[in-house]
Image (cartoon, rainbow, N blue to C red; front, side, top):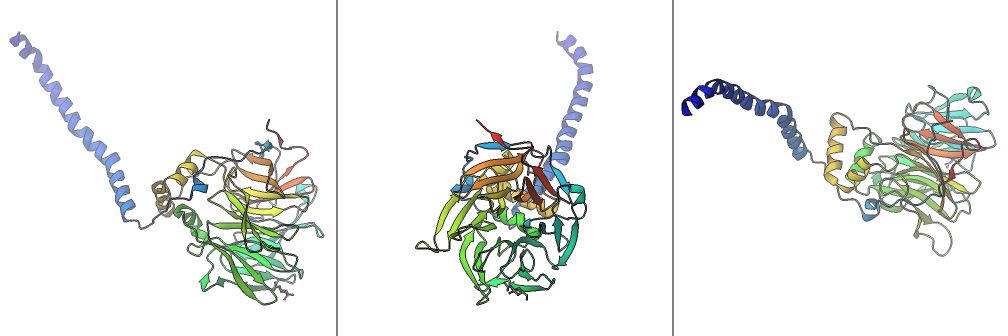
Length: 391
Ligand SMILES: *[C@@H]1O[C@H](CO)[C@@H](O)[C@H](O)[C@H]1NC(C)=O
């Protein structure tokens, strides 16, 4: 038996040599291909000083508000306006008397887009160069255009095209990402600085850090004074003055909510709820003059976003990736939510393949949308492609 075993084991010895060779090379290959990057990433992670905070409970809830109607195939039937002439049209401001949309682009230009029934007849005109990155845009009371420029600050652009800086700091703190703006009937300008810590280029780091660096402010042209109305906001973004002039709605992106700041009456200066648990993270908000606000949702809910919100270490990982190799694409189901004057959602337009929509406004039968990354404005005929009841 033992002889048989020995003789039988002979070829096995060389076999086991081969296997043992394989055994020693296998961990080595594993070490090279898997462990080294893991160790490197761990060291990188430990060395990086980026220190994200837990998000507040409002951001952590998975609950999403019910919307009675939706069109979840928004891209079907969408037309493209100004293809190639617009570089990341972030906000859209519509002037009914001229039939023109004003929009700020990534190349520092404010463009005028003539709204026309036929997309091919829409004309894009390079209007004024701010030298910065025009984001929020609104019409002033003296025929001027007021711009929240992400790099420069709050700007007054006259119809003749003169650019004047109105303000770029408050309470001794410079704005880093002047973002949303609207103007009340009495001329007071309401605007946000999304972050005093991070510049526009680093704005996702602000969101990943999960700390409130945003402020809601007002600028009074009569006194030229800038007043901080609210601080410690989470990436303070879009702003809209209510048509009755009683409050200002402001969006806080990572916490998926818009609140109102009361500017008139006995509750002046107080903050009230407007809408929570949005089906995505809000960017700009615009009033259409017909009873609805349109809230752009930069990205809809997704597993990766949800995990990032929940776990600071994932946000740290994303921040390191963003700084070194670029962030993975985690935005989808972007779109626009229509909300009535009381803050009740009425319709949700979105698409799985859509990301980074930053503004939306209804003009006539159409929903026009801007995006901080796309080379055009999209429009959707709401009569032909309406939101349908969800139940
Ligand atoms: C903006 O500039 C125009 C032209 O100089 C002026 O008439 C207007 O009052 C200014 N607006 C603000 C808000 O300062």
